[in-house]
Amino acid sequence: MPLINLAWHRRGFFWDGRSPTLREQALHPIRDTLEMDESLDNVVKKLQASKVYREQFVRAFGNDSITPERIGIALEQFMLTLVSAQSKFDKVVRGYDLFSESEERGRQLFMREFDPTGRTKGAECFHCHAEPFFTNDRFMNNGLDDDASFRDLGRELVTGSPRDRAKFKVPTLRNITRTPPYMHDGRFTSLEEVVRFYNTGVKKSSTVDPLMQFNLKPGLNLSVHDEQDLVEFLKTLTDEVFLTNPLYRMP
Image (cartoon, rainbow, N blue to C red; front, side, top):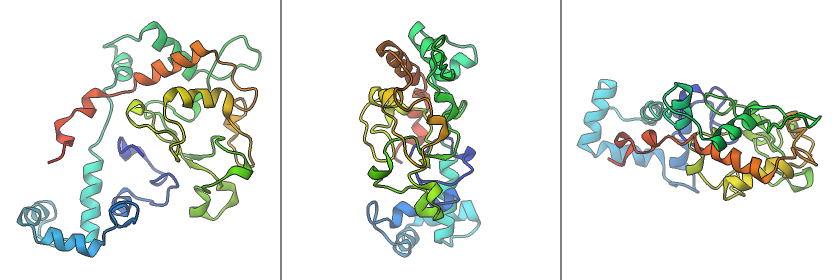
């Protein structure tokens, strides 16, 4: 998941929320066999062998004792600096820029509720992806599969509750153009596919969130033009200042 604006997350980390704190989350990829497949003891030995890192631990903690706990704290503190808030959307909100006609139309669709009468159009996006962070920091089943098709039980594997089956953390949409593929399993390769799914492809299941009620068949009745405008609005959430910040490059 994107490592931005993490200071405002309150309900755990990873798609299933298995890590309650960011400092704990930071150590998981080191040990995970699908990622670094390393032991924390060996990482500590590597850092202890480096004069540069020993000196940095002195600066950060007052002495050169290197422990997994301190490694987690240091990684946490760095990740908390990854704040993204200078996208075109942010500039428009602050009065420094203007949306194009298509972007503004997409914004209105994004922020409106679905009208069953058909008098106005709305895409219902803001309930789950609320500004300014464009996430509600909750775990939800967004209707990717029906009960018979669940392959990943998601949050249920953490809580043990069937009510959490196939629920995953709602990701931020900031910089979403730079983070394909989409969904927890990467099943969609483009934003166009994602928008089309929410328009016509949401499936009913025992734990699908009630907020998806209007996305279920026949769907939101958005036109191809509406879908394109929504994608154009999502592009305004790209923060080039953050993405090109030299502080975040490889040292």
